[in-house]
Amino acid sequence: MKYNTLIRRSHFLIIILLAALLSGGFSAIAQQNIRVEPPFWWAGMHYNKLQLLVHGNDIARAEVQLDYPGITIQGITRVENPNYLFIDLILDPDVRPGIFPINFRLNNKHIYTYQYQLKQRNQESASRKGFDQSDVLYLLMPDRFANGDPLNDNHVEMSEKVNRSNPSGRHGGDIQGILEHLDYFKDLGITTLWINPLLENNHPEYSYHGYAITDFYRIDPRFGTNADYVALVDAAHRKGLKIVMDMILNHCGINHWFIRDLPMPGWIHQFPEFTRSNFRAETLTDPHASLADQNRMLQGWFDRHMPDLDQRNPYLRNYLIQNSIWWIEFAGLDGIRLDTQPYPYAGMTAEWTTRIMDEYPNFNIVGEAWLQRESMTAHFQKPYADCAGFSIGMPVVTDFPLQGALSRAFSEPEGWSEGMARIYMVLAQDFVYDNPYNTLIFLDNHDLNRYFNTIGNDMQAMKMALTFLLTTRGIPQLYYGTELLMDGQEHLGHGEIRKDFPGGWAADTVNAFVAAGRSNAQNEIYNHLKNLLHWRGNARAVHYGKLLHFLPEDGVYTYFRILNDEVVMVMINNNTEPKNVSINRFSEVIGGYNQAREVITGQPVMWSDHIVIPARTASVFEMVK
Image 1 (tube, rainbow, N blue to C red):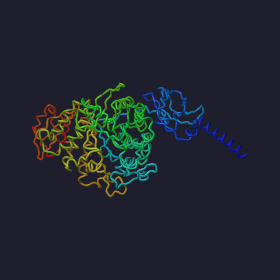
Image 2: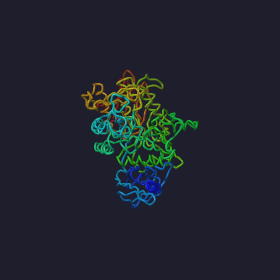
Image 3: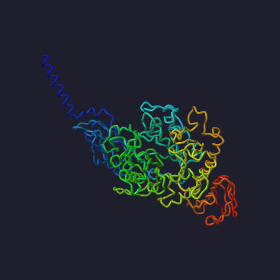
Image 4: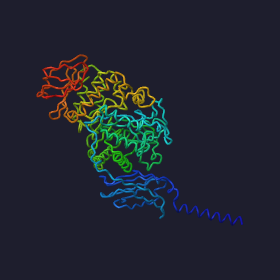
């Protein structure tokens, strides 16, 4: 009796096991959380193709069914990892928005349904105007700016907790903190906010900077939510402010979900042992460079916690392009700052830029090309082609050569190639750029010594540098805290150049958001900057006018911005004594003008043969006929 019972039980178990094997583990797939990215899309986009990345346990074994008017499955790709499917869709121009099921079936049985949403695109979004030369960008690091919501300082899903005493730790700044201070930017005269990355960086340490993304579609919950980010952009727009999002194509974080379960070996660059980039972008423009050096530059990792993405992989390439377009459309962005522009493959950057600019023709992008020579920098702005036929350059590039000149020009004695001559010689090489006016110009940023430290805490040098920055060619960028004379040296640690904005935390004893909380020196530089910014807001000659400059002479550098009848003259005296400057030298520009208004003081100036420029001063004149 017992023997027969055991036989029957064994047969039953065998039948159950066979049924599970034949079914392909229906419940294993059906009960899990299938990830689909992009999580939704829009009807009415210029580009009519959409590639969905689907991730789930053994999802590649499933068949895909989709029945929605105006959408056709062009193809389904199964790759080396069975946990991935790539679904290529064609969207008809007249496809209507709606929610439709994507059904997954195995052995003719339904196992899972994903409800995919196609939203209605706002057609005005296609013609949105990005930032340009009329704007001034304000770069801020969200974790170090202001803590508007202390309740999100720590999050159960995030491994690093807040520790404001650690210069390299999380301090708690967030989206709400930025939102609460939009009036501060507006009052100062800023037009555009460039915010360091806000996307999820789920690492046990050093995650505050945002450049090691672990989810490309999610705002880090310690900053807020996706909805909070959209609310910030909307509120900024209502106040006339633009938002630039910081994006990374070169690398992600080691804890990204698709790094933990790679779709295929060629998704990232892999080596027998950890291999760091040589960080030598010069090898990409060097006609004599070895392939070994170029590959080390392009394929080496930034750090052990930042895997280097291989953008030659067509699925990864499309994933990153769609993600950028998704954020532009979803959040209503006004621009992108592309991190480490030279490090992704040129073909990737060209296709990415082309797809974005085709979708948003008036949009703008600035690429971080951290190089020390003008010709090498210009290479990353000029149009270039790859094997796929893409041939568009980066609209705007960062001008590190000019920043290098500014770091020394106002802090050294005048000479043949020193002082003001440094600035002149950089600008004299503008012929190498596709458009020198489309360069992002700056004194410092989140990776460099604070400029006030670089110039030896010299207030007059600071004023001259800021005046130059806001009147020369290019698009000016200020780093948060510059208006407070923030100090710091990069070699002491990035925390030294990324200090908390005083007053951004409820416990702060000093609130620099208001004049009463600033020192006399801080208010002096704040007011100097504010006056210049508000004047610049309406100075069309500075926005779009031609730059014409004269050789520095006796330590005085003179240049003009000219737009039709609007003429602005800037004279910078870098000497320790006043200079009596002959006006006749500039007659080709100001021959028809007999008076001016000095912008900083507001005083009228009548022309004679000479003008006296005070020592260590930059004077700005609006010409009047």
